[in-house]
Length: 502
Image (tube, rainbow, N blue to C red; front, side, top):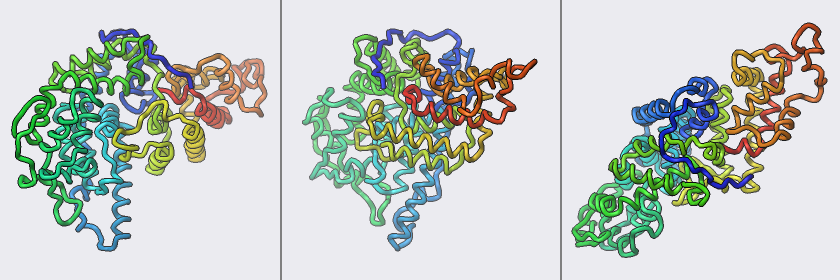
């Protein structure tokens, strides 16, 4: 895989040129899990400002997933038999993962962001082991994904999932546990060693103490116990007083606004624009600084800073397109949206299980630092796994309905060429649909053509001379071969480096 240096020198000035197909597809690959041919075609000719405003407003207005019947269950709601209880819990988790993954396919920016934040404000289901806590964790992610970051961090820290995961439930005033205080600064808001000291962590842990009431039934929401809170004086980030949880959040955002903004905007930049934000060849740091200024000026509201980024010349620069390696979820869900193939719950369960094999387990990131993304998705084992699972994915669609491969080709070439006799027209349209910037060399494209022209068809089958008075015997809409040809082309493309990029 080629190493992409960040040479993007464009600015945060608005991108005002009407979007072409390349940039419309780029926008949907980054702000969602790609989109159908029809959605991209509708976006072509619109301005970035209009389209981004629509996507942001859609995300802000979107309700969170409805609570399942077990949203407020505790252990008393499950069978006394441990095996039966575990089976029920596993079935509920599978149901919830499926509901959330369905949302990833269609919810564009809202769940692109909730997915991003699940890898920033990390918890691991296997550790806190309570389905009710999982529901409220995801609810917090969805409600706050494009809202106020201070509110988001404050709410997340009091979810039972986080309190259990980072040992807040063991943070007694007379015996403070520093785990959550450390991660609050190091991973969630400031970045490692950026504007805090070890003493700040110790004092903050004291201020956060008392959220330790776990109930007697198990899997009950954590409550505050004032008798187990350290009520003494603490000095945090230079401010001294009898601080508690809310005051910690106030002090943190009042005393370290620039550090928070710089750290979060760098994470957003690396996720949405380019994984390398410190290359000297481009001006990523200037972009992040501009985003951070917007973030602080808007009192840590996320929508204005993301709106500024997504409408910018920098975001739509040629050097920003096709430079991020797809995560496993990106790879499968992008293909679902771009192909228009019919899918069901079994398809999405395959997406989740295959992503798990490739190092991306929904609601269970690797550790508190999350999945490390980008180049780490394509080590030798994962690369082979991506190829093999993509082939199984495609084979299942072909076995289910070969004709949907013809439909993909006809959608990709457009109505004017829906019955073309030129195989190059078909291959180029599909390549352009499934890769961010096409294939790298002419030889790569020729190889794709060879994959499409199945071996038992003579070369002159595609020639006008083969069918006197006509335009060639082979025609996309009516010939027998196109479904198999498109399938074989997709099998070939799924192993190309360009297919791994977005």
